[in-house]
Image (cartoon, rainbow, N blue to C red; front, top):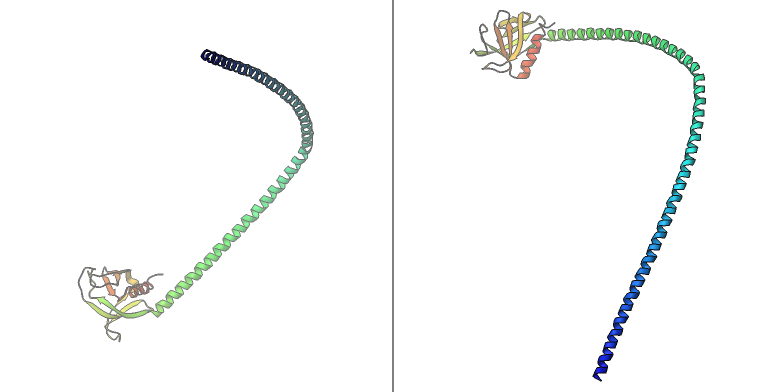
Length: 258
């Protein structure tokens, strides 16, 4: 019984091995067949690709030949059209040249006439501007002189401080400052009095004889109007405010400005 089981076991193992080997052989055969089929399929695809490319090449060459023929025909037609146009252009060129020359001559003549008229117009405008400017300047000068004469006639008066002494005086010298009533009229003489009653005149200055007028400050007084007299002396008078000093300066200048 034991030997029989051993024998049967070996027989079963041999059968299994034979079946395995057969399966491997079948698989190998199937693989070979698949590879051959794949090779045939690849060859077919390559053949079809070559045929497709050949067809495309033939079509491209045919299309190129057709396009070249069409281009040749188009160029021939274009050259014929250009030749016709050139002939037409040359036929009209002489006429156009003559018309252009005549037009140019007329334009040049019109431009010359227009330039001459413009030159005359500008000359007239310039003369008119000069005339108007002269009239305006003369009117402004008359107005200025009338206003100046009116202001001279009106004159000015008011209480100011006068620096005592003038000879050798300067902004650094010390002196007494006295209140005085100053009056200037149409004749251009600045007179100053002890008080507003104008009964006691302390002095006078002929403004046309002064060399210069200016604003300044003294170390003792601000808002001063300085008169530089022709004899070298400096006359000081001081206002209570800068505005008042500027007003007096503008008034005294009226009598020396022309």
